[in-house]
Image (cartoon, rainbow, N blue to C red; front, side, top):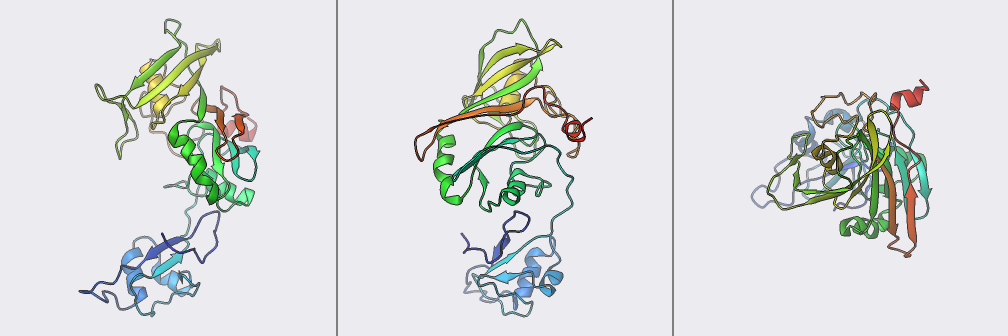
Length: 314
């Protein structure tokens, strides 16, 4: 782990850091200057000469790195990257609960949980660190970008471990609601148990026949919406990627608005017109710090309106 960053957060993001390699007896000075090392590592990603000229690289003690500084092994350097333009994700982040240790929010669809890929500023973590003034705010579990509903976050690093352990130990009760086609002949409630896998580079997950079970969900019919669809109550007992979406698909009732299942619709990332009708609606657990019973419910209800329509009032 690096030492404490000498740079404050910017736009809710920690500074990036790099470290020169440890001392190499055979190549004690593979680069003559720090500028040469930075250029060799970062020339494809940032304007190294421009960053050096503007004093945007700093050492552990906060001193600005210059291109002429003598290269040294095991040296930490921090800097802030330039952020790409991002399209605003419509929809409010509702703060359901906040105290010293945790924040519970109700996430709109299309908003990433963490900064990743093309979604950096438009993520729950970055937006809320700034809005709530909590620079160490971090999620304790994740929701897919297209999934709406409850998300639990820790206010500071010191609280993360005990709450994350709850999810690892499977002692958190998570309940979802989903809108999907109504199949009167389907025998419910039903427990779906199978082996799910999602391979790197592939958007869709798959069911692996004859493999050991690693995913289990209880599916119950909750209400008939009268338009050929229904609301289903989903209780995952494991937490595999896309688990509920794949389990609903396996029952012949794919979740309405799903951009990936049963087929990849190749929906653009900035198309917010059709939300996935999957809502993380309830969260319950025994607090690992004080033992109190914690129960939270979403402020949203199915069917979810288009994020664009909801924001524009259309």
